[in-house]
Length: 273
Image (cartoon, rainbow, N blue to C red; front, side, top):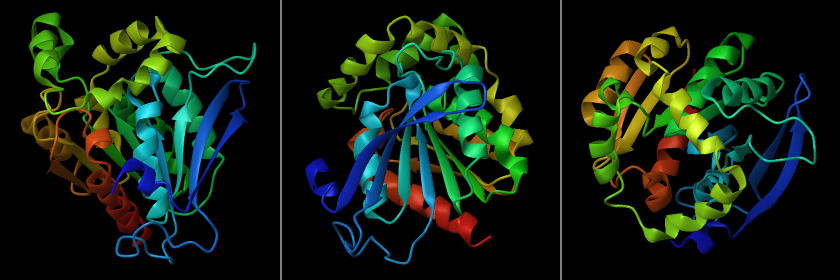
């Protein structure tokens, strides 16, 4: 199925949300069109309910739109968070793990829409983790998916980061350059996010989770090798799992169907309690 096929029967819209401290974030919403079962009935359950919230790496949302459309076609109302978008002269999130997590959590906390799976990719996995830690005590039915989670302890120094960066994208596609439109918008924010992410000890934060965790990455993702995934899953406790999928670091873009099925499964697990 092509990306265009995945958007058949899916309604796309954009909305702005203002959280309590006056910060704005933009949300790309995808939902199955009323009365339409989705592009492929074999993967779409008309009775499925739930929400997926996608947090992009480096604050660049565009590459997550195809998988968001897949998720909507499979029955989940899906939001892609764009916390670095500018809403006129209004305040926006600080380009750090804490700043992006704070505004995402503030929006999550005021929602009560049934089972919700929060999905973060790359540095967005770190943002999603912190956002869930801030909201998990609200009583919402939450699950967390951390895809391609950065950074391993060795990669927090340049001598470990550079070799990983040289091979992390080897199974990706030039089509991912669609994010260049986002890069032009955020510019130096990328440096601040990376610097913040390298100081963020993911392995010390996952034990604080009280919700089910799935950690996943592409088989050739040198940013998130299998031993790193297994370590995070082990530290998060019994309600966690580690799943390796095809592809490399951006397999959420190159393999949206497989990744969407993993997210739907995480949502169904939390819905079943």
